[in-house]
Image (cartoon, rainbow, N blue to C red; front, side):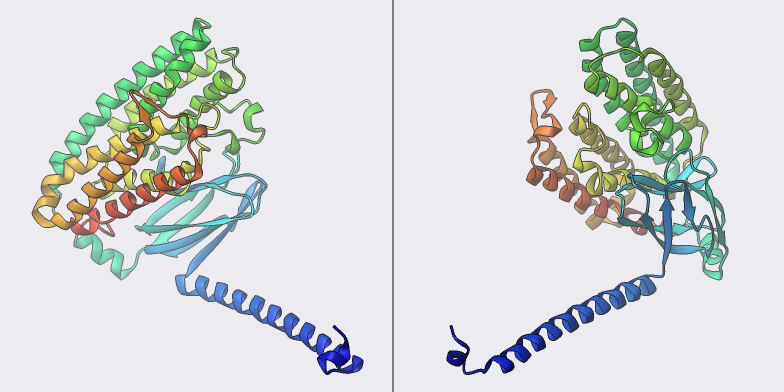
Amino acid sequence: MSNQANGLPPKALRFAVAGSVVVMIAAGALFYYASQVASSKRHANNDEIIVNIHPHSCEPNALTIPAGKASFRIVNKSERAVEWEILDGVLVVEERENIAPGLSQVINADLAPGDYAITCGLLSNPRGTLKVTPTAESDAKAKARPSMVNFIGPLSEYRVYLSLQGSALINAVDDLTKAIDAGDLDQARALYAPARAAFQHIAGAAQRFSELDNAVEARADYFEKREQDPDFGGFHRIEFGLFKQNSVEGLAPVAQKLQSDVASLKQQLLAQTLPPEQLVGIVARNIRSLAEIRHNGEEERYSHTDLNGFAANLDGTRKVIELLRPLLAKTASDVLTRLDTAVSDLDSTLNALRSGDRYTAYDKVGPDQRKQIADKAKALADALDGIDPALGLSGL
């Protein structure tokens, strides 16, 4: 169409086009500025503490904050997926795993006064420190702690559960080790999933012990040389050998080390006291990691046996709910109803991917089904978060 047909002379048309470009640039700049301001406000409003993870360190690596609720935004500035943990001695207080390169995730923690350590990406990286100072509110919460008498029974029964499941894990790893020692690849492959499921029944409790948990199930990402790193061991080194390298070669010492580590894990599970306010938290955190991270298939990336682990996680969670059911029935029947619905929904979703006693290989599970698993797991994690407030344990 000609300029005359548009009713504009050539010079006026050039000015109009130039003006449109200026408006577009200005709009883009305004949008960028607004997004930056919104981001700054979001951080300020949430009082987020920014922690940058570099290839070999954290910035900052020494923090001091007041007791109570805190939000940490963990920014991964390295070139691999990393995890970040808050440790109280050997025990994990909070963690976020598999933070992708260039992205960030938020950890919300409710911290009591004390001195903590923080991990910084690779397992070989030096740890940082986190000092939590007391406040008037934290002192008041300590004085208002509810009577622990009602929790003696559930905690004692959970200890029995950990003992039984710990023994089952030891036996399953022993069987796996025998198959590896015998050079029987097919048998070792068949025994890998049951051994992993035995661990996943108590994974939430095991993850309290950072060093042992990393020895048992750390993924290759957390080691400098990944699968080729000499420190890469545990279940996933065995999985890599059996399902990626299609061989048992070199796995005998790895399996023997795993035998020793799971035996030590059982001892630690029974030796360490589990406070009532952590009973729900250990399974809730495990289910939330399923919803946010593990549903993507990274956990069992070589064997694709993820569904076996998800089902075992659900069984471990169901056990905690059953132990607390009498207390919830008295004071929070609505919370109990929500929990039962969420458990049933996730159970049905997983069972739909099962044929007989076998689950579908996870590389055959499509994105829509994976999202459904994530959504159901999130609903369960959210429901679990309602238990502690209902029982007066929130914030302890």
